[in-house]
Every structure is written in C-alpha cells, then in structure tokens.
Image (cartoon, rainbow, N blue to C red; front, top):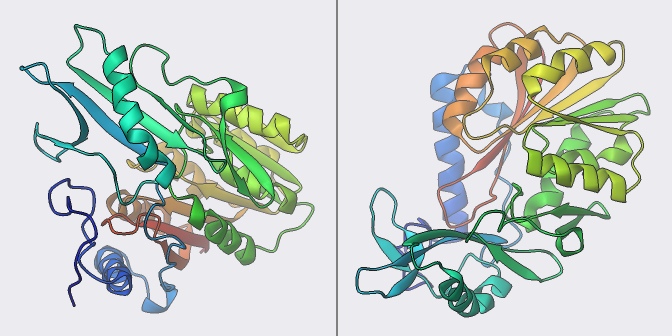
Length: 342
C-alpha cells in the first residue's frame, strides 16, 4: 500500500526512504530485513528476536541537522543536504524529520551563516541542534565554533535527570525513544547494590547516568575529549559519587576495570562507533568470565554481525535481539543485543 508523501522533497534529498508507505509497513520491513541479515550470518533461533520498538514520534523527532552552506560560482549561497554519492546540493528550507524549533530557525540560520562566511570560504558544514527546553544553537564556521558554555548546554530529561550534551558531542537525535531503551535494559538485569555497570564508549554518559540508581558502582569509559568534558559535567552536576569516568580507549581501560570488579555482579553496555569493536576489545570481553550480561547497541548491521560472530564463537550466547526504530521514515535501525555467558 502506497501513501502520498508529506514532503515535496521525498525521493530527491536522500534523507527519507519510507514516506510513501504507512509506518506499520515500514516497521515490518525493517524487522524483516534485520532478521534476514542476522540469520544469514549467525546461528540464532527466530525466538531471540523481539518485535521492533516503534518510535513515539514518527515526524519532527530529530534534534540535530547537519547542513552544507555552499557558495556557487555566481556568488549565490545555497544551504541544504549534499546528495549521497554526488557533489549536488539539495536546498532545504524545512525538514519533516527535524524538530519544529529547528525548522523555525532555518531561515535565520542561513542569514547568519551567510554573514559570517569568510570571503575565501566556498563550503561550510553546519550543525544545528535543539534541546528539550527548545533553545537552538548552531556552529560550523571557524575554529571552535561548536564549543559551548556550560550555561548553554542542551539537555534532555531521562529517568528524572537532565542529561547534558553540546554541539560538539555525539548524542542520540531522537529523544522520544530513549526511555524505551533504558527501560528494556533495566528490566532484563537483576540489579543489586553490588552490581557494577560498565558504560563503554559512554559518550556524555547517557546510559551510565540514566541507570546510576540501579547499580552500586558505574564506570564510564570514553576517549573523545569533548564527550569526556560533558560526561564529567553530568556526573558532577548530579553529585554521583559512585560513578567513575575514565578517559581513553576502551581496550586500554577495560582489562583493569574488569579485574577490579572481579567477584561482583557485572553488567556492561557497549555502544561503539559505526565501525564496531576493536579486536582487542572483543578478546577482553571473551576472557571476561565475571561479566554476566553484555548489551551491544549497534547502528550498523554489518559491524554488529562481524562482532557477534567473534563474541559468540566460544564465550557468549545471544539471548535477545531487540530492534529500536530511532530513525522513522529512513532505512536506519538501531539494534540492541543482549548476550549472556555461554
């Protein structure tokens, strides 16, 4: 069944793929595709797949847009999305997926960016974001233009706590679905006052902060300096003395952290970059016999399959595969996999 797309740019800007079908059909297609991808490569039974979690908001959910401002040979300035695999730019004055505050701000953004663009600049990559409170900031022209003052940090409320983030840090673009994924992780683990929760590739500390009340100790590991700064701020502002932040690579810190947690119930969540896990991280997780539960959140089925093959070869067993539709109307899908020791 086809429906009329709401956006006049559907099929040309490259952002959406599913505006022309009902949302229920989109969810079914994503679920089917994920099952095919994982079952072709992994020996997992069909019953480990849970139904896809829909997004509470299907439109106007994105809290971030990445735009290109370009100066044409005739001097005209264009602002919009670069079309995938081309040098063509599709001008955009609004986006059906972007939060309404961002859409309202786009005309002003172009005016400001054009005024600030140095004469010798032909292209600038702009980042525009909004927080739960509705304030909009942008950057991308000039060094350090993405840095923010503490009083300007964006925030979103998760589990009753404000999680702060900035223009220069990674943060999930769809805030409406965050409570769903936190609740799912929380429900699957028998938390106690002795539980050690490891938030690996922690970013600004979303999972570590949101689940801090469920664990006796939380250890967050992150190597990106900008994210480390925000994670430290999140820990400090909430006075979480049992949350420890380690700056550096997961493969560097994880062996020692696991050694320190030996004998305690230990749960880990890994939310790696699109490229997946380093071989040394996989080897450490394979050897981590005191680690009872492992959650793997992935935005890339390809790297997820590759890493799961290694993790499940001897040490781990896939218990549940839980897809979450973080990006409605696009082909992208986040997958949470729960693994237990084999």
